[in-house]
Image: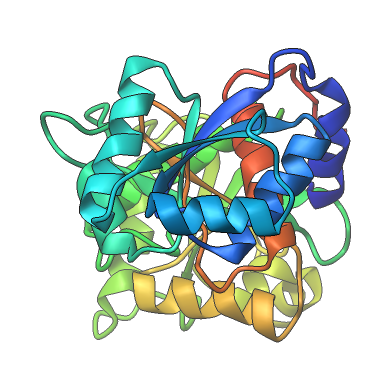
Length: 306
């Protein structure tokens, strides 16, 4: 999929590029994004934050005023609220977290009166190529749900399934990840995994196949599943990995980035407008792919899964 995200660029409307509002944009990585995406006519930007620093960085990087508009906000909270307001009014098509804390950014996004809530649980999804090259894989939730309960996990699954179906997967396979692949009352997430699997069997979770608990190895490796005598349409073939909590998901996600050096994209599901919320330590390339992925989700032509 990461390869296909790059291919999505050919479908973009160069005459009417999307407008991205960035909160706390006084950051060199943001400037590199603005310069590259402006040059390729992928997007235009509204850069919200310390106006003096942003203007200085724009000049240092040779970025023209045609590519970016600067909105001065000295406070990070105000900057986050401003980009959310721009999205609500339609002046921005997408919004992005710049050089500010996630909690500050999310407070504005989740504001009950002035945020981007749709009434659904918001969840973060990371997208990357399967290790065997056969399609894509999602992992969730790596950034938002700290200790999700049963209903939260149901919503997290549904958000991920919705994303997969928008990418052309009719019935994605969902693995509920734990430390082991059997139900153990001493490990509560194995109990929840079994319940969610049965909920899917009974039609309470639709348009997917859910199985769990599964350990990570037998969720992604057919050989590992066979070695443990696991018979399941999901084991070894998972399209979506749902982790028991933020601690596990975030560690696995950062392992992909810092140990495996994998390219990833990330998206937030459940908002009125697409939200790009990458880590401040993400590479510029991964940030760019997250933006292109969000542009795709905002209504660009379908690129079906092959």
